[in-house]
Every structure is written in C-alpha cells, then in structure tokens.
Image 1 (tube, rainbow, N blue to C red):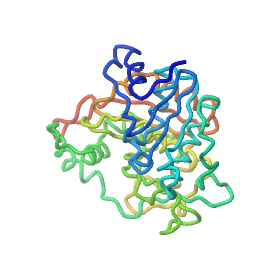
Image 2: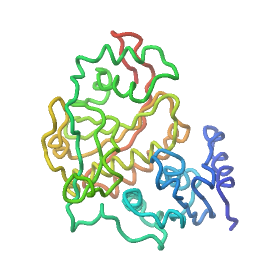
Image 3: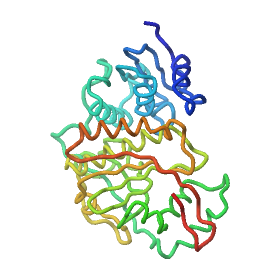
Length: 333
C-alpha cells in the first residue's frame, strides 16, 4: 500500500468533505507524518517537545485524532525524533504522560514507538505526585466587571485572550450557560514529586494553567479559551491534557498539598476533589473547521465513556456568538 507524507495526508484530509477542503496538516519540519491507511507513524521533534501544546509541532493528540477519524487510519504509532528522544526533563515527562493517557482511550489503535522509555514519573504510583495551586489572593470579580467588559466592547485585533478570559470570569450569562456555581481563572497544573518546590518538578515547572475552571453541582468544568485570531487545532491537545490531569486529581492519583486556597479564590482544592466528573470545553468566537466538525469530539467522548468510566469526562466545543456591547450587555453563546 502506497505510503503518504504530510502533503499526501493533507490531500486525503481535504477530500473528506466540504468543510475540510481548506484544512492543512503541519509541515514535516514541525511534525512528521508518514505511512499508509494501515499504519501511520507520527513523529514529534524537539521543536514540538519544547513548544506550547497548542502549536502544530506539539499537538500530536489533535493531529492523531484527525488521522484516525478524518483520514480513516487504522493504527497510529507515536514516536520521538532522535533530536527529541535524547532530551530529558519536564517536557519529556509531560509528553510521556500525555501519550499514555491518549493510548488508554484508543487501545489497539494508538501505540508508542518501542524505542520510547516505558514510563513517566507522573505515572509512578510509588511516589507522591503533588499538584500546585493558586498562590496569591485574587481581586474580587464583582468589583471589576465594568472595567473588564470595557476592554472588549469593540471587537478588534487588540482584544487579548487575557482580556476575554477576565471578562468571562465576570459574566452572568457565561455562568448561567454552564450552570456554574463557582468560577475562577488561571488554575495551575504544575506537577511535583513529594512537595511543590524548586527541583521537585515533574512537568515543566508550575506556569501552565487552565484558562477558566468552574464547579457545576458535582462536576468540574474546564475551559480552554481562544480568541477570534487563534483557531488552532492544538487547543484540543491542551484541553485533553488539562482534563487528564484533573481526572487524575479526582482519582486521587495526584494530590494537593493544601485543600484550602488563598483568600478571594472562588474555587479551592477541596471543591475540586469533591467532584465526580469532568466537563472539558473549548470555547472561542471562531472555530477551526476540524473543531467545528463534530467527529473528533464525538469519538473522544465515545472513548472516554468506554475507558474512563470511573470518572466520566466529556469534551465539547462552544462558540461565543457575540461579546457584550456595553456595561449592561453580556456574552451570547
């Protein structure tokens, strides 16, 4: 059977339907895709290993899902290029953790290159794995609504993800849409061995954070936010990682040092660990066609229902239809 490279798989992807005709795979310089319908080897390079998860070079889960469910590849093997395989530290640990959780959902269809080492510290049950949490007091959001909304009245290229995130944190319609009893922004997902301290990092320090996190009854709701200028497919990989980490917190695999957060934090670790399920939502004013197409989220949810049924996890994409026009307005979804 004829082997295809990145360009060949792009042609195959674009033939999959009207909404996909302008979609593109990354170049082989970013992430290498080689193989036929029976098996594709997806190789992550050092650029992707060290990059933000949303970038084309790093988002192997997102591109893997595209290959499996849009290009109808039967088996996917994930590998590291030699320049990446020789690296060590938090980036490698996070990659191995992500890969294991991805494999869990698609047994028999996703495997790792045998050359990869077998396990990550994040998966080692013989050590205590500890998550960090917000360290500083937060400003009271009810006092900041007018100020935050004012920054997004007129949609333009100047609206940052941070501005949008802060406005959503104050939004009544946002909380009503997702039945959120509690909500806050920037929940960190750094993982450490034994305690949160320099030199104890398992993942890449403590800077990674979930954009918005909420509590809806007994459900933990995670939001990955994109602006109208950022429609990356890689948001799926970010959301998948955050959902995996927080599911492991609910399972007791990962723990918090302190179940009480700083003052003005609307959510505390003890709120999180009481939850019995996770809802993971990609939210944006504009969606990439591969996100708009329901296939990937449908297949993810079918897989989690089958393989992660101890702590249910559901993924979805929600569009922000309009922003508030003034201090009396609000978001529409």
